[in-house]
Every structure is written in structure tokens, then in C-alpha cells.
Image 1: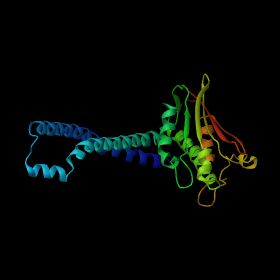
Image 2: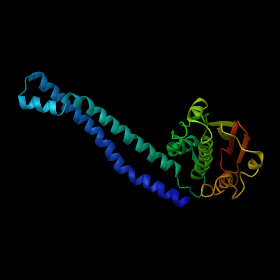
Image 3: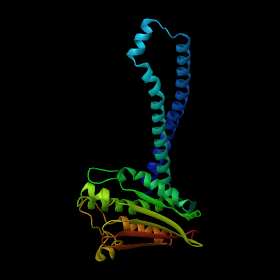
Image 4: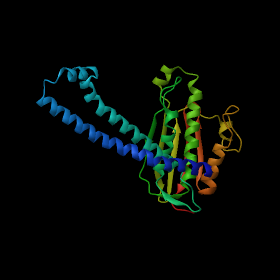
Length: 269
């Protein structure tokens, strides 16, 4: 995981230069286009009766439409580069190379970067509508931790919830799911002077008691062959409990959903 994290962080870092060039070039192009359009408007005001070839060419290229649409096109391109820059930043945040010692970070940045990476899986597909994520963040101080490892915990819990929703969607119609949306709620709070809690809750089908009792066991999985290794939640608990001296617990009721609660100390132990 550390090697993969370093690889992703490296790719994100290397992509910054061409993305930055595109972003700056589009900003310059917007200024250039605006100057050209202003010059064209001024020309038309002083020479309204242009030669026939000029008027014919303006009709051929639909000049009026071009003048209206070109700035919109550049704005869309800028929006796309902003999006790529956001993804690059989130990849670097998510894949932070953990050092030998804990560092002070903002937990919300890690959660947000994980959600951005999973965004493509939250979108609507042929079987279900988009999965809304409700973020109810409290005021949290910075926390001493191994950020890359905690981001892997967030990734595993959220990805499992999406897997469960995708599986459950096979049993309902698209219209049923629109009427009763599948949702994920993420809550954070300072529960004690030195303790923060992150709670990830879904409104899915819930987990049977016999499965819940084994959910953190090494190599235990309810997924079909090729879709689950039984390592994700076991490693997640190891990261939280052994690496951070915190706790990772699960609560679930059939038909009502499942909630994972992570408690962490603010200061390194």
C-alpha cells in the first residue's frame, strides 16, 4: 500500500505541471478572445457595410454564434482543468506517504479526498440512482496520525457501503430506489476533550448478527469469489486499533442500515 501510495502521489505530482500550463493558458486565451471580440465589435460599429466576401464568410462560419459560444467553451475548459487540479490534489492528499512518525492533519481533508476518488462509483448507473453522501462535520482540531493509513480505512468502509448498495439495487426497481434513496451519512464530532469520532452510516439492508460478529475477522468475506478478499475490514481495524490506539466498531439492524464508528485520540500515543 505504501508503494502504491507513493506511485499515485508521484503521478499526481508530475501531472501538476502540464495541468498548471493548461490552466494558465486558458486564462490567457480568455483575455485574448475578449480583446479580439471587442476589436471585432468596434470594427462592425464603424464599418457596418462590409464587403460582400466578408459578409458571406461571416454567414458561413455563423459569426454571431461563434462570438457568443467561444467564451462559454473556454469557461467549460477552465472548469475541466479546475476539476483535474482538484482530483490531483485529492490524490496527493489521499496517498500521503506515511512517515516514521505521526503528523498533524485535518481529518476532513482525508475524508473529502476519499469521497472525490469514489465519486465515479457514487454516480447513477443502469440499476440505481446516484447515492447521496450527507456530510455532517463538526468542529475538529488537527489530529496526530498516519494520514495515508486512515484514508485507507475511510476508503474501505465507504467502498463496502457502495458495494452493498450495488448488490441491493438488483432487488429493487429504479423507481423504488428514487422514492427511497440509498444514502451514506458521514458525521464527525469532538466527543471528549482528547477524542474525535468519525461515524459512517448507511441506510441499507443491515448485517445479520452472525456476520456482524465476524466482520473484522481475517479472511472473512460475504462477497462472491473474485470480489472480496476478507482483508479490508481486518486491516482497517488493525490500522485504527494497533497503529492509532483507537477503536473501530460496527452497529447494525436488519432493514435499517449499518454504522461504523471510529474513535481516535487527538494526540499521538
